[in-house]
Length: 155
Image (tube, rainbow, N blue to C red; front, side):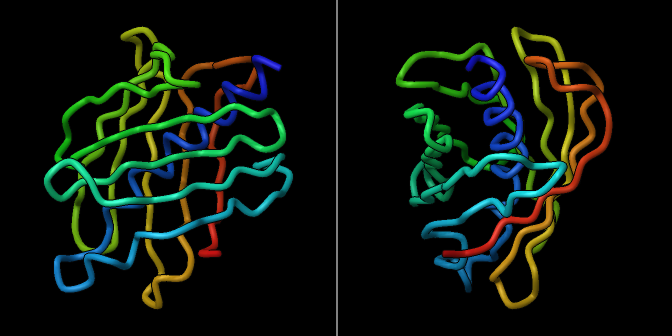
């Protein structure tokens, strides 16, 4: 169970960077509900609801499959580290999300102060999919280090 939750946290952390991809003219583009496409590199379903918050940032609420766990992150998308809450409590994970341009972000992931991965996210030109390239430099929750790609689709 902890492995599933930690996998969800790691995957969700990466996506968070993708949600700050829209420019001010399309500020509503990232809002709404997104579903991670299951596959060999991204098993299990995660649904994410994105709301505006944090002076131009986003509140991300993740439903981690059928585990019943909920993860919430509030980030201004300016590179500052923010805590990841799991079921309303600090999880030990933090994220530093930096918007690179209108369609790209870069995120640094840390667990208990130690970096365990980075991600690069790209929003499609039509705003319907987000492709996330994860590079986990350390093992977390039984997940091996290495590169993985995820695709998220607007619901």
